[in-house]
Image (cartoon, rainbow, N blue to C red):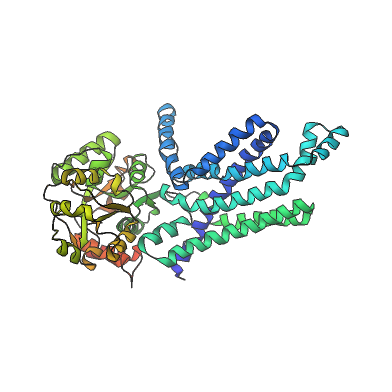
Length: 515
């Protein structure tokens, strides 16, 4: 096992445990009393169970993502009213989403356990003069406890598993291994995240199982051992976070989206800051829209984005006035609208481009998007997870009248695999991806200029606009990275054999910068 992977495990495990434990505790605090009320009131039972079931039907990743814009809007309202907002990125949206996810099994099992208590036992309790409260605490809850604990065990396993999906909203977790590993095809990294999450879920399930058996048998040693095990495990797992409670110098937060180039550039910026003695947190695997909103809200301090993405997705522009005009417009409009500083273009472009295998393109006589339009009804188009919902795709589709036989979506890494295996005939490639040259792909020409320019640009959060240390660390990156150097760095992370980590690739890229 790579020691570099294991060195990250304590912090990621600590955050994963903190998030899961908090969500489960909050879910228990809500669902248990709600279950008691629902068991006693048929009018409340159906709507509460239906609502909890409805939440469960929403894909967990979507639920996590939906909380971010909701909280961001609420934070802006609070800031407008009181002068201070709150963080809408990371722990809070993850906590709320996972809490909702944990509720159904606890709620359902509480209702089932309480309504399943033998009516004769309840009647006997009434017969000896017990009040409703006494009946609940002394008779019904103890008898229903094994069923309720079974629900808590199910909720714990679900919550620990779903917590890996909190990575795209900026929460550190064991999911960081899985998302980064899938993107870079680092299977050791994926396995580390999966195994750690599975072991954690199994350990927690077994300890909760002790508590369940202890309550069922009225054996204090069993449930006491389960509780003690959970307490000790929680203390040990959370120990790495104790250092965060101590006063410390200002920490910079460098963001990155969810692909190799972004990991490398984030490492490059973080290395430069750390070289000046600054402490840096890396927030990687952010969604494209989440990254910019997080920067504008001050949740992250800097990251790299692309001019075409900002032009089309952030400003909602559909025209293409040319590279210089796009950069000038972005610099002015982002500053005016959000206070975001476009510091500098890095010197290379990572443009969306449609690419094909050379042999396939030659066989079909396709060199440009105009050629592709005539053959598209026979072909399958592959795109990354967001391409078909982006305005760039709408522009290309409308301009050239592209109508494909089928469209499929892939993680960027698997998209290139699909092209190689013939499962896709055309893909939405990235011009700075080293796999274009390595796989001998043909990038189709865009004679009508449907796609805007995609210069890589450094963005700084409003609160860091005048930060001298950050500006000094990023000084010298203006126009310093050639597309060839970026392709080489990307390929060193993405290739099948002899691949390196984004951190190693960033150090190699630093040595190639134009001075």
